[in-house]
Length: 403
Image 1: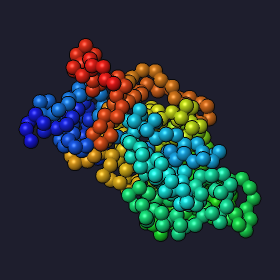
Image 2: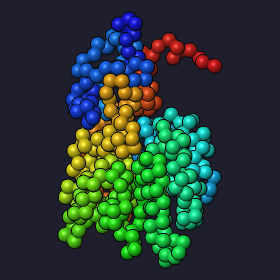
Image 3: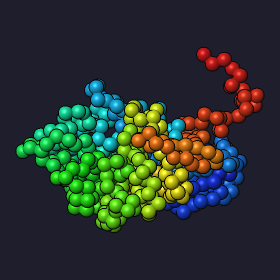
Image 4: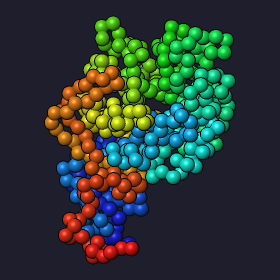
């Protein structure tokens, strides 16, 4: 290998923020064969086949969104978005579909979406065998722990855990529909397959929120939608409830999970200012929020940033933390040897507004925007041509008619 061809791509002069490696400063990043080959303060540009000057930009690990819906079912309830259409434009290189598919439809999901997407996609398997489809979610007879666990065990490289959601939020309980039916079956499946449970939950007098996070859920399990209006995360004085910290101490993972109705400033702002910060940021991206209150991962991160969480911590909550939550610590960082999933971001200052699910807004003065994304070393998003020459200086092939 000659000096001139040592690297395929060099990101030069960027401000790198990688919480896992404690890097927060100017670094060059060299990429070879889809992996991070070198990280240093000054790498010779002649050593790379292509050099991209990222001066003035932040360079971070590719973002990881652990709550999305990207499996396109043929049912009328299908609300999923196309992963590649929404991931790279916001710096996301890894998505986790959270329970859109159950055991009976997972292989179709894998064949038609996971295997065909450039975005890396993992899945939480719904405890409901038919997945996230209307009335099926309300019948415990459709919740087979062994069946759900068997899919996770059969595809451990793709399936990261079990999901439960939307069960019996209003109607009276009966012999079939008992308060904890969905949670208990999902916990059993999680125990069988040895992977975490993600819980979407609606508390009722017979199944309280403190009981869920202090007794039912196990260390490593994830409660998503933590700042949804139904959760008593604040005490009577408007401060974070003590049991929120107790749950954190026993290993319960709290995830933001914005969604169309699950993020309210009136809960999030006092909680964060009071010292209760979720472990991870995610969007719950689907067709009913992608053009509304959520938009994308960076918009969600910007809300947390403007509530006072430091930039490096916001990046941690969107990279290394979710990677570890789903059992993939090889992701979410820019260590030498890691797959070269990279986000190049702008941090803008000015006057901005952000909205929540109650149609209220919060003003802020910082905003992250994506300018380029790399997936496994390939530039997959570069709308401003950061990696491209001026058209007058383009190579000879640019001037040919290609037919």
